[in-house]
Length: 139
Image (cartoon, rainbow, N blue to C red; front, side, top):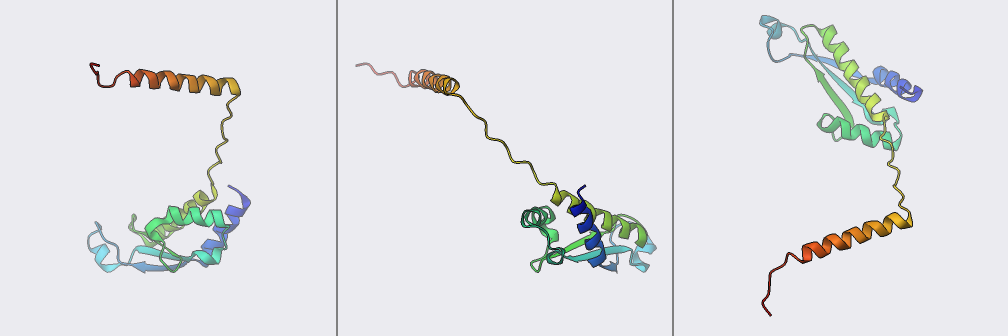
Protein backbone atom coordinates (compact mmCIF):
# COMPACT_ATOMS: atom_id res chain seq x y z
CA UNK A 1 0.00 0.00 0.00
CA UNK A 2 1.34 3.41 -0.91
CA UNK A 3 1.97 6.08 1.69
CA UNK A 4 -0.63 8.30 0.01
CA UNK A 5 -3.26 5.59 0.44
CA UNK A 6 -2.18 5.02 4.05
CA UNK A 7 -2.42 8.76 4.81
CA UNK A 8 -5.83 8.94 3.16
CA UNK A 9 -7.11 6.02 5.22
CA UNK A 10 -5.86 7.67 8.42
CA UNK A 11 -7.53 10.96 7.41
CA UNK A 12 -10.78 9.16 6.54
CA UNK A 13 -10.89 7.37 9.90
CA UNK A 14 -10.41 10.72 11.64
CA UNK A 15 -13.21 12.39 9.62
CA UNK A 16 -15.75 9.58 9.87
CA UNK A 17 -18.88 9.97 11.98
CA UNK A 18 -20.49 6.92 13.54
CA UNK A 19 -24.01 6.25 14.71
CA UNK A 20 -25.44 3.08 16.16
CA UNK A 21 -28.75 1.72 14.93
CA UNK A 22 -30.89 -1.32 15.64
CA UNK A 23 -29.71 -4.27 13.58
CA UNK A 24 -31.97 -6.63 11.71
CA UNK A 25 -31.71 -10.39 11.56
CA UNK A 26 -31.01 -13.05 14.19
CA UNK A 27 -29.96 -12.27 17.73
CA UNK A 28 -33.06 -12.81 19.82
CA UNK A 29 -34.04 -10.18 22.37
CA UNK A 30 -30.56 -8.65 22.10
CA UNK A 31 -31.49 -7.26 18.67
CA UNK A 32 -34.61 -5.62 20.07
CA UNK A 33 -32.87 -4.06 23.09
CA UNK A 34 -29.42 -2.96 21.88
CA UNK A 35 -28.43 -0.83 18.91
CA UNK A 36 -25.50 -2.96 17.72
CA UNK A 37 -25.32 -2.07 14.03
CA UNK A 38 -23.00 0.81 13.15
CA UNK A 39 -23.49 3.30 10.36
CA UNK A 40 -20.42 5.20 9.13
CA UNK A 41 -20.74 8.49 7.27
CA UNK A 42 -17.81 10.04 5.46
CA UNK A 43 -17.70 13.17 3.32
CA UNK A 44 -15.62 11.94 0.40
CA UNK A 45 -14.93 15.46 -0.87
CA UNK A 46 -13.13 16.23 2.42
CA UNK A 47 -10.56 13.53 1.58
CA UNK A 48 -9.30 15.57 -1.42
CA UNK A 49 -8.66 12.46 -3.52
CA UNK A 50 -6.89 12.73 -6.89
CA UNK A 51 -9.35 12.80 -9.79
CA UNK A 52 -8.69 9.29 -11.13
CA UNK A 53 -8.78 7.81 -7.61
CA UNK A 54 -12.04 9.64 -6.86
CA UNK A 55 -13.66 8.29 -10.03
CA UNK A 56 -12.63 4.75 -9.13
CA UNK A 57 -13.78 5.25 -5.53
CA UNK A 58 -17.17 6.47 -6.71
CA UNK A 59 -17.50 3.46 -9.02
CA UNK A 60 -16.51 1.02 -6.26
CA UNK A 61 -18.83 2.62 -3.71
CA UNK A 62 -21.83 2.38 -6.03
CA UNK A 63 -25.14 2.87 -4.21
CA UNK A 64 -23.36 3.40 -0.87
CA UNK A 65 -22.46 6.91 -2.03
CA UNK A 66 -25.12 9.60 -1.71
CA UNK A 67 -25.80 12.46 -4.12
CA UNK A 68 -24.16 14.86 -1.62
CA UNK A 69 -20.89 12.95 -1.85
CA UNK A 70 -21.19 11.07 1.43
CA UNK A 71 -20.22 7.45 1.79
CA UNK A 72 -22.67 5.49 3.93
CA UNK A 73 -21.45 2.13 5.26
CA UNK A 74 -23.59 -0.06 7.50
CA UNK A 75 -22.10 -2.99 9.42
CA UNK A 76 -24.32 -5.45 11.27
CA UNK A 77 -22.61 -8.83 10.85
CA UNK A 78 -21.63 -9.19 14.52
CA UNK A 79 -23.54 -9.14 17.79
CA UNK A 80 -21.54 -6.38 19.48
CA UNK A 81 -21.15 -2.70 18.72
CA UNK A 82 -17.37 -2.85 18.91
CA UNK A 83 -17.09 -5.76 16.47
CA UNK A 84 -19.42 -4.03 14.00
CA UNK A 85 -17.51 -0.76 14.43
CA UNK A 86 -14.21 -2.51 13.66
CA UNK A 87 -15.79 -4.30 10.67
CA UNK A 88 -17.09 -1.03 9.21
CA UNK A 89 -13.70 0.68 9.62
CA UNK A 90 -11.92 -2.26 7.95
CA UNK A 91 -14.36 -2.18 5.04
CA UNK A 92 -13.79 1.58 4.64
CA UNK A 93 -10.01 1.06 4.61
CA UNK A 94 -10.33 -1.74 2.01
CA UNK A 95 -12.52 0.46 -0.19
CA UNK A 96 -10.02 3.34 -0.12
CA UNK A 97 -7.10 0.97 -0.71
CA UNK A 98 -8.88 -0.59 -3.70
CA UNK A 99 -9.56 2.87 -5.15
CA UNK A 100 -5.83 3.61 -5.10
CA UNK A 101 -5.06 0.40 -7.02
CA UNK A 102 -5.54 1.86 -10.48
CA UNK A 103 -5.55 -0.63 -13.36
CA UNK A 104 -2.45 -0.60 -15.53
CA UNK A 105 -2.76 0.87 -18.99
CA UNK A 106 -2.69 -1.74 -21.71
CA UNK A 107 0.28 -1.41 -24.03
CA UNK A 108 -0.80 -1.36 -27.65
CA UNK A 109 0.54 -4.33 -29.60
CA UNK A 110 2.74 -3.55 -32.56
CA UNK A 111 2.61 -5.47 -35.84
CA UNK A 112 5.40 -5.33 -38.34
CA UNK A 113 4.76 -5.01 -42.08
CA UNK A 114 5.04 -8.75 -42.82
CA UNK A 115 2.64 -9.82 -40.06
CA UNK A 116 0.14 -7.17 -41.14
CA UNK A 117 0.27 -8.45 -44.73
CA UNK A 118 -0.17 -12.06 -43.61
CA UNK A 119 -3.14 -11.12 -41.46
CA UNK A 120 -4.85 -9.26 -44.31
CA UNK A 121 -4.14 -12.14 -46.71
CA UNK A 122 -5.74 -14.59 -44.28
CA UNK A 123 -8.79 -12.35 -44.01
CA UNK A 124 -9.14 -12.24 -47.81
CA UNK A 125 -8.94 -16.05 -48.05
CA UNK A 126 -11.52 -16.46 -45.31
CA UNK A 127 -13.79 -13.94 -47.04
CA UNK A 128 -13.47 -15.85 -50.33
CA UNK A 129 -14.47 -19.10 -48.58
CA UNK A 130 -17.52 -17.42 -47.09
CA UNK A 131 -18.44 -15.78 -50.39
CA UNK A 132 -18.43 -19.25 -51.98
CA UNK A 133 -21.17 -20.34 -49.59
CA UNK A 134 -23.73 -18.06 -51.20
CA UNK A 135 -26.89 -19.10 -52.97
CA UNK A 136 -26.27 -21.19 -56.10
CA UNK A 137 -27.56 -19.60 -59.32
CA UNK A 138 -28.20 -21.50 -62.49
CA UNK A 139 -27.14 -19.01 -65.19
